[in-house]
Length: 419
Image 1 (cartoon, rainbow, N blue to C red):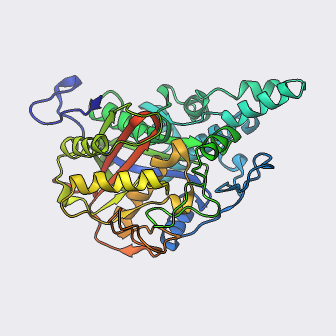
Image 2 (cartoon, rainbow, N blue to C red):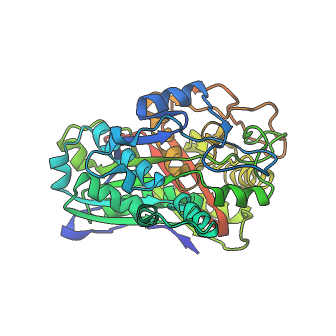
Image 3 (tube, rainbow, N blue to C red):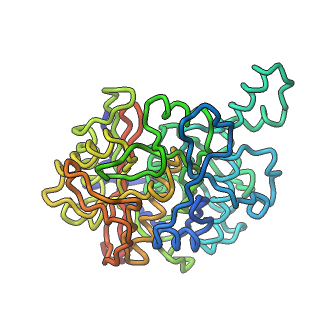
């Protein structure tokens, strides 16, 4: 199934107005390389990584168990209305990131509460960390903690934002399309604003390190023993990570009225699902998804300045994704993966990559693919190894792939008054 919205021709929206342009005016991030825009940007530019042994659960019995956990996150610093202990860890990430995004956008809460808002958050695991704990207690014959049971709902990733910010006219949606979910969520916000259904949207993704997902990837033989090396000839797999990324999207008219800083414009996106294999990506399907995104955004492949790849560091993903890129691009642009720095943050992955793309456009650089030694000849791309590269970045493509063939490709561009 392919999905795109044709924004050409004489499309109209409610009120008889043409489609609205959609811009990014606020960024909130909780990551292992930095919390908040300033630290995150510094981490991206310096190629920071904080890989360490996982502490979220007992890793006895695993031959290796490194990950990208966040060990300096204090939810009480960002969550002011709700009790952080009533939220699961992933919801804490999403709620904190949403408040950061609003603050970063210079948007007063009273003004936000006066607007129609979509809150759309993607996830792979929801609150599986708490579900793991519930199962462990039951198996051990221990009483179940009611508070843990109450916070295990994945819906809290989005509804928690509505409650924390005390939004009045809001729709809360949690999107479970696995590791492509962040781009799905941003696409839903783009559609809603473009059509005039809402004024603003808080969109992104969040996930926490949990036993279930680590074990699943370990059983597949895709957990790296030390670090993640995307596109490297000696790559051995992913490292599980965690975090949350929320973008504040609004119509260009709204941003102009309030004199907001604009990081980037959302030009369009493409979605498809081939469902050809439970876990293996399909090159032709991903290539079609890129073509859908280009058509939707009104751009040509040669206009893309760099690609933020899904780039998991597994043998299958990197070769397949690079092959799809070469299939679409006659001359592939620099193609990087931030997962070497962040780990694979599951449903947060493409949301955090989107934040990185927006910052790259604003700041004029391409983030590096770290831990890189020798590029796999079969991949045949320029991964911008180990050092960030200064560049005039105008248009960026952000790829996201997920199990069951879910693909989502987002196109962001530099804001130009007359595009």
